[in-house]
Image (cartoon, rainbow, N blue to C red; front, top):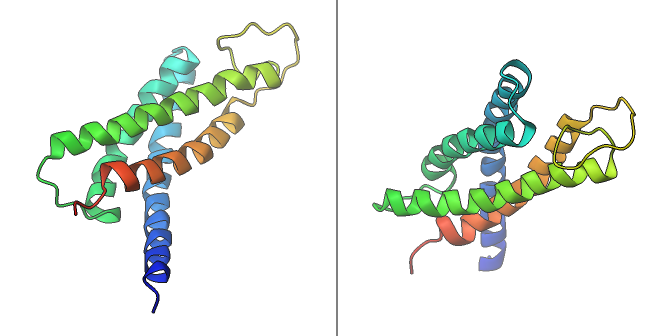
Length: 151
């Protein structure tokens, strides 16, 4: 069997596992986001940053143990790499949410003023889009950088 086929299958399997971990992270992210935004009344991007960070931390440990089966003894360095990838992902995530207010009036009460008064609240739809795009970044960033096997 061609090693590229094995590698492709392994990558797909890892991506599926990463997706399962990501789903648990999404539950943490969206649940905490709702609590911080709707109950505590925090600003959208502050609430998003906190919820995203909590989910990323949970995801690190689950991905380390289950998805990538890392044996790296330098957990601090590995976690720092994971957080770096996650922070870039957070920038992508928050960027999508900030830009959503330009393309969809009243999507959220964010950075840009809303000159229209259309009562559409699509913040959580844009959040799901942001999660999907960020998931791709996080998977490949972590596979190729954080959990890259040492030669």
